[in-house]
Amino acid sequence: MNIDLEELYRDLHANPELSFQEVRTADIVSGHLEDLGLLVHRAIGKTGVVGVLDNGPGPVVMLRADMDALPVKEATGLDYASAAVGVDHDGREVPVMHACGHDVHVTCLIGAVETLARNKHDWQGTLIAVFQPAEEWGGGAQAMVADGLYDAVPKPDIVLGQHVAPFPAGWFGVRPGVAMASADSLNVTLHGRGGHGSRPETTVDPVLMAAAATMRLQGVVSRELAASDAAVVTVGQIHAGTKNNIIPETATLGLSIRSFSESTRDKVLGSIERIVRSEAAASDAPKEPDFHYEERFPLTVNNEPAANRITAAFRAAFGDNKVIDPGPVSGSEDVGELATAAGAPLVYWFLGGIDESYARQWADQGRLPEDVPSNHSPYFAPVIQPTLTFGTEALVTAAREFLAAPK
Ligand code: ZN
Ligand code: ZN
Image (cartoon, rainbow, N blue to C red):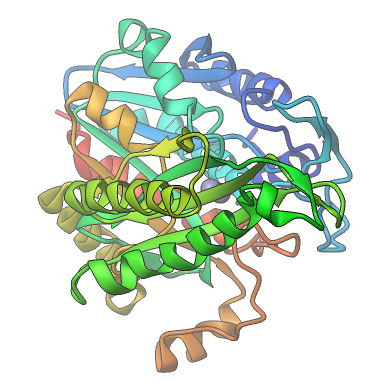
């Protein structure tokens, strides 16, 4: 009996799990892979699962889905909405939601494996299905590689995957070359000298330092990069102080930095450190600032010839006008780690996941109303169909493009 993908999706959506805690999801995935006759390796990179379907000599094709959810309180009002809570890696109790659509990715990959496993006479080669933990946290792909992924399974000739995005279902975005930005999450601690709020002359005020640095950092992209270059510097957190009449000892900044080339990345990170150090010096800080990098994502670079093959295959399968080049996207991904570690080309594309009724507006104006919720929104709600059908068919089409024809 065929797997009911819509039911699987609703179940995953209602039961999301945080990064590196995808235990229930991994159990469900493993069960389906075993039923479909794959050789299954579990607990690679803590909760990662890999299934191998050896179907004779031929290319090795890896399909990848990420499994983790986010600390977001779901507000969609759907009858399969999540009410889950979890404990994050700092020990805090948080709501949990599949706000990035990784439940779509898991469901579509199970669907694609089922199609390929039930039609083994149609192709030849080896299919590897990777269900990766902790994409949101940034360490999942690396954890699987470090935990011996490529000792357990053959290195692929190509790595393929997809991300659901807020554009109409039935459309695909394929970008040859640099497809997604690198991301660096940086925490900065500025050191001052605390004291009474009425006597600033006896202190070094880290709040002023933090404010001045935050303003000045917005000059990096606007004043130090060429107009043809691009990057994002966001200060998403500022923390300092406990009471209005106390000048605190320290202030912290939390930054998110996105770049589209390694040279720009180096330049932007260097400028940020220079500006923060200079602001500390300008205040006569008693101590140099501390820089602590957290999540880091590589550039996502699609192999150009392979991406062009996928574009042509999708156009043939889904319609000439349904495949667009979205340009480089400022979001980030760690799927590239799986390809880099294997020395294999990567193609990672975007899958439309909102109602098709928006298609006319999308086609005419190239954009959607601003109230269409994006990934990571508490209102993010991909339409189940035709998203799951297209997502499944896209993976099958892409895999078949690189697997061999039967002899
Ligand atoms: Zn995400
Ligand atoms: Zn995501």
